[in-house]
Image 1: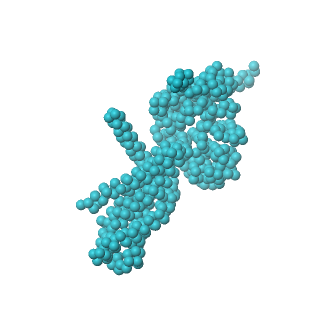
Image 2: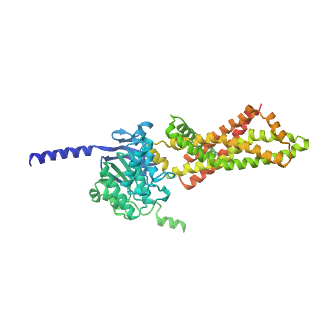
Image 3: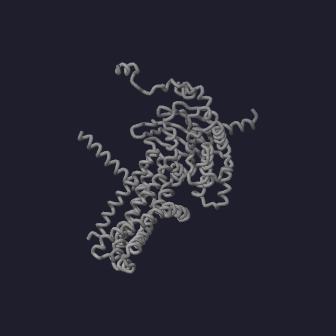
Length: 285
Length: 260
């Protein structure tokens, strides 16, 4: 090996190490419960900077809850959630609000403000957090809307948008302040194939172009596996499988395999927990 | 059986106290803090229009009819004693001391209060409040505070308009229709109505009712279960709770102001 390729190689390895150790989100032994219902039991998870990390799992296991925990809208019972090395649960209100300027979330419904036009929705965070002149805000908003293909829809009201368009408008709003982390809550749910394709392309393209870090919560296996750099499968209160999409396809856990292949019966039984069928019928006779 | 009854009572008490605590925290979060004129003024103006101006029609029409009914009922009694000249004070004092503030508050709770509860409940159900929080914008300051202040400012003004229109309604029936002397109607009113005792106390009542109605309406919306059923229930609760609270506080305030 020549000196230049060797240097390049060592530099590449150093960068790799930096990247791998540079986690923007670090969840450490986190437990969370709602009333008596334990949702997460000492769960560990990391989100690498600049990557698209997907969190998959069956419905009702608390994937949205996880995003709310990262965003500081909920507090864990124990354990810690670090954002760029700082503990989210231990932050006071003003620190949390300051930190939230660096993160953004795309809600499942879009959560556009119904009384504002698409333009005003996208301009909202800029107007709230900056004192920029209106002419500059207009340029910024049009840039964000152009990125999601909705520059022509700027004057429409949220009620006039289709589900896919609302999701894209909300995405433009989510990137308005150029956050470091963007969290997508079920971005593909209820989308037609064209809208879904657009959202898939946008998540990957925005992540690369803007140098974002993306966390995608979804149970749409095909779409998630096509864009994610790293995938966590969450079930039974903790992470049951993790790795790159390719590693996950080879995972030995039957639960992971059942989830990825969408099988009706398996580690997660088809039938809800109940007394034996024959016993119940006999009781009725 | 008794133990279960006690358990239920205890749970209901805890639920009520927890609700009061949440309501108190919501209000403190909304109204305490450094005001920002640049951001706050346009929001307040918009809410003054939505909450105040759009309630004008129902207030004016109700005030007119209540003034007319008061004059008609009062005249039939007063005329028996030859005291129809006292119709002016009867209409004015009834409206200034009681009906103006109370009926305005009840109408306000039904019209603006229920609309606010539904609006905020729906914002919660569609995750607009959560998304605002995630954008580092406090929904208490951005959504709750302007609506609260708009209600507190507009309700006393609406009560004054209600009372003025009611007095004109009384004039319409008493003077123009039943033939009471116009000079007597106004002069007896001027002689018997006290600025501090009657007018100011009426306005104070109205401010207190505004505070109560807005607090209840906003809290019910903010605390609503984010489903269609939850919002519907919260809207009903706003009207019922606010109306009962207004009537209860009216008795307390009347006892304090005019009781002794």
